[in-house]
Length: 200
Image (tube, rainbow, N blue to C red):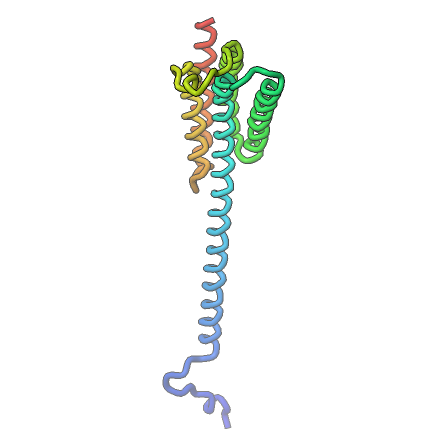
């Protein structure tokens, strides 16, 4: 007797091969969802870390810009005060240098923009601090309400470029914008160089 006659599927019964395919497909979809979820979490975590690094790097520049004000509004000019402010200046400069190195590892484009921002900020930072040291210490609370000493850093273009580079790097398609960002940074460097030669 031909045994194949006995192997007729009952109505509504799924053949074994088809059920295996469905199970494999379901397992594949589940694995894909797991992998995509993991990658999404990793991207979000990485983006948060980079955002925090960028924010800290900019905060270091802001702390450097505040140094002349800290010096000008010092309460005393004794040796202890001068040592404390000198240490603060050194620490702030060191922080900016460290962030430059970290950004170089993180993104060369952001490091380029940050380097320009630091250079332009430091160009006036030294003269501003020297001017602040020549000012007598604050005498009483009313000294803090005096007119703004006017330490204006001409670094707004560099700051805007740095912010742009950082914002682009935080986007999913950031790598696609690096070439255009680099061109803008180099173009601004050339304009700064021409302006410096003209003014000198």
